[in-house]
Length: 382
Image (cartoon, rainbow, N blue to C red; front, side):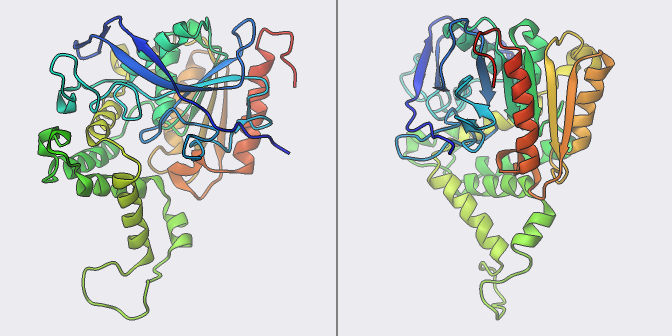
């Protein structure tokens, strides 16, 4: 029987060295909250870094203080595809986040008040630079692998470009080399929903002891809608109504309406997600385009990557469709990189990378055995 990790206690890295962001703004100091699972070996060669998606955080596996499982708990732990009997797994809450790392809800040392809208916009490169400080802090010379889905996969790509010698393997899952115009449009609609909420107060809602619940809920409803596939929604809800008779009003009648409203309400009230963080992270997604610095040529951008790659997509993911993963694979092959590609059949849309799937798990488990074989350790066998 597969063992569990139990309750995990978050840790904090406090950095007093100023960090110059892509925007040119200097962050004088910052904290990164992170969790670790498994044990770092004597050579510090079995470490994995997991990069989270938009609404994710550092709690990726095990249980938190409220007995809530991590967002990827199905895949991380003793005997699981990311086997903590062999790997030391690290996941941090991104800079600008709202789950302990320095972000808009943190105190601004210059004013003594929360940063709110004054917190600088960060980019994927800024996240990678701060994660690199965590690498050094933990005494890890080179990651055995970096792993990320969706926005996390974009961070993995940025790592492979900016710090090619600091990772041996890169697992890019349900990601894209840049957002499409449609994806940028979705993000803008979500931001407008938040920013036009009367309780937003130009981003200073905490000073007014309120949160823009309505805007956050609407943003989450839109985002959640894009994470699901039409087939899955049809199979799960169809046109099923809560009551047989039509009401001829604008109240919730269809089950899918009820589901989306529930998801929005839960996100706005129970997950404590900061509205300014939502704005910041969607903008960072919009800005991500590593090829822009290389004449908009992704092959040139990835030319300096030395890691071995696993790229995974899902057939029903229309937000980051398989064709976007094909772009990454082609660019890597243009450079004769060592790359494996898997296209997983799933009806769950973009969210498929988070959910149980036998084919996905098989691919993942097989590739992690390959990662382990490259770990310089006397115990690197399964």
